[in-house]
Image (cartoon, rainbow over all chains, first blue to last red; front, side, top):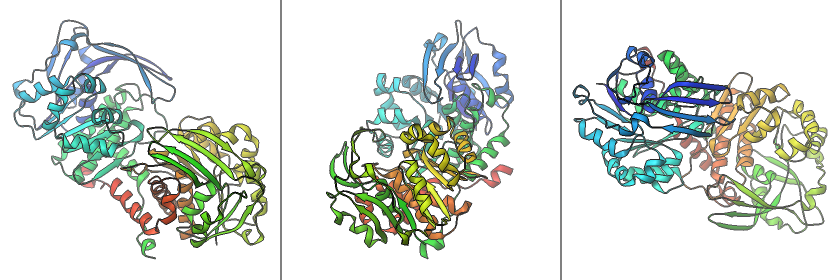
Length: 308
Length: 308
C-alpha cells in the first residue's frame, strides 16, 4: 500500500556561498516523494502552474511516484527564493510567490483514498484536515507544519493533532507550539495533544524521536562538504516514512531505523544543489550512509569495566 | 599512574534563569579533577588566594585528588561571574578577576613529574609549554585552549601543538584556530599541526572525535532539565581522560568509550548549580548515564532489509 503525500511542488531559486541555482525543482511534497520513493511507492497530490516544466518530474514517475493527483492550474507555480549564509545553517527567504498554490484545495483522487500511509507536508492545517476527510482508513498519518501556521491557525492545528500518529517538526516549531523550551517537555506536551509519536528535527544537530516508552536520538551526519541544505527536512520525512512503508511495521525497532534512514536521506540531499542529489541517488547509497552512521556512532558498552 | 591537571581553581558567581549561586566552587582544573577522579587518581596543580575556603576542596582529596601542587598565594582567588540566557546555551561573562591567577607560574612538584597522563586545562599556552618542560615522559598529553589565546598567543599555541597527543576544543575554537568552518576540515588542519587526536566539543550538540582512521560522534545527552551548564566542557575532558587513565589504553575502542564517558559526566554536571552535582556523584551514576546513552542511540542495522 502506497504512501500518500500532499503538499507543495515548487520552483526554487537558491543562493549559497557556492553559487546560485535558478529554477531548481523544489517543494516539500517533491522532496518527500523523491526520498520516500527510494523505499516504497508514493502517491503525490499537489498543484503546479502552467509554467512548470513537467518533464522535471519524470524521474519521480520512473521511481514509482504516482503523479495522478498533481493538478495543473492556470497561473504561475509556487516559487521560493532563499539565500544561505556562510555557515549554511541560517537562511533568509528572499521571496515567496504562492501562485497557483494560493488557491490549492487538495483533491484526493479515488484511487489514492485507500492509502495506508499518509504524510501531510507543511500546508494550511485546515487543508490538512480536509485531506483526512478524504482518505478512508489510513494506518499511519504523519504531519509537518511551520511557525506560520502555529501562530496563525493554532485552533485548526490543535484540532488536527488528535488525528495524527506522528508529528514531525523542527525544534523551533516544537517550542513555539508547546510553549516549552526543553524538547523533552515540548514532546510530552505534543504527545498529550494526540500524536503518539513526535519527531523533532534539529537540522545539522540531528533529530529526536519520542514515543510513549522511550527517546531516541539520531545524530546529524557530519558532512565533509555541506553544499545546500534545502529540502533536507522534507527528505528526512521521506526517508522516515519510506522506511516504515517498506517494512510495513511501526514499532520501536523500526521507528529507530526509520530515524536513521531519514537522517541518511536528509544528509545526502545536502551534498548538491536542491534536489540534484535525490534525482540520481541509488537506494544502495542510502544503505551505505546508514552503515556510515553506524561506524560514526558505534561504541561497545564496557561491560567488564563496569563490574571490574 | 596518575593524571596530572594544571589549570584554574576559582570561585564563581553564576546566574541562570533558575537563580543565582554565589561563591560557587569553579575553575577548569577543579571541574576536570572532580570528574576524572571518579575513574582514576588525579594530581592537581593550580593556585588559590588567601580568601579561598580550602575545605571546599576536601571532597576532591577524599576522592583521590592529590592537592600537593595547589599553591596558596597572597591576594584574591580567581573569580568569574556569568549570566546564562533563557536557553542556557548562551551566556555573558559579567566579570573576570584574575587575582592570584594573574601571576600563576605552574610549578610541578617533584612527585608529580612522572605522570603518565597530562591535561593542560585552558591557560596561557606559554605556561602550558612550561608545564611540559617540567614533566618527564608523559604517555599522553591533552590540552584545552580558548579563543583568547588563539588570537593573542597563536605562535606559542602552534609551538605547543606538535607536543600534544590530543587537543580538546569547542567548535568555535576549532574554527578560529584552523580558519576552516567545516569541522572535518578544521580537525584535519589541527591534526596536521601535531595532535593525532582531535576532540571538538559542540556543547549540547555533542562532541566529535577525529583520529587518523576514523570519526566518531558522541551525542549531547538530551536532559529533561538543564540547570546550569557551567563546567560541562571541563567535566567532559575529565571523564574522557579519567576513562583513558582507568583502562590504561589509547585505542579506537577506548577512545570512543572515553568520548561517551566524557559526555555522560558532562551531562550530569548540568543537572545542578556549578559543581554541586559532581561533589556527591557516584561513579555508578556515570555508568548508568552511559547505559542511557546506549538506549538513546542504539539501533539495529537492518541486515536482512539491506539484502531483501
